[in-house]
Every structure is written in C-alpha cells, then in structure tokens.
Length: 134
Image (cartoon, rainbow, N blue to C red; front, side, top):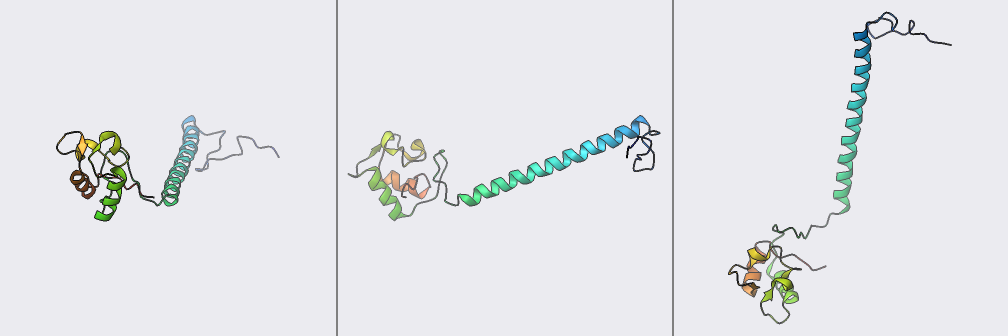
C-alpha cells in the first residue's frame, strides 16, 4: 500500500497536499520541539539519578583537605591525632602538620611557623583538624 501526501492529513484536517508552507513548518517545528523537550527531560532524570546513586554509594563523611572547616573533634580524638602528629609532644612544623591540619595559617595563631599542643586543641574545636583515624 503506497501513501501519497494527498492522503495524509494534519491535525486540523488539512491534507499535506493542500497545506500551506506555514502549516507544514508548524508541524515539523512542533515535532522537533517535542523531541527536544523529551530529550532534555531524560537527560535531567539521568543526571539526577546518577548524583543520587553516587551519594548513597559513599555515605562516609568527607575528611576534606580544601582548607575549609571539617567536623569538630572531641578531646579524646584530638589527643589521639596530636600523638600521631607529635609523638614526643613538641610543636609541629608546617611539613609535619600537612596530613592533620586543614589550614596551617589559621591554626598557627601566633604566626611562628609552629603549631603547639594548645593551638592544635583549639583547632580541633574549630574543625580545622582532619580525623585521620581509619
């Protein structure tokens, strides 16, 4: 069975053979717009589901190294991390502090280039010490 343009009709009853150019463009544009809207909706749903799946796969908290505050640590955790950072209890330098301190300049309150036990403890209370315990 062969179809001809004269037998196909637009939604308003006009056949393709008698339709004006503007009516044909409106039909094509409407189909293209509907496809675009559908494609966009699918893309949004896929990206949202990927973000949701990623969030549920990694529920552990971020220990963060970007220089912004992390979780406030309790005294026991703070002491444990201080003992790892400074086994002998002495002040620690910038190089020694890298694995533990979020932002060295903010923790080194007196600006002497060393972090004391008191500065470290204060930093724990401000969320400036990373919890490196497994």
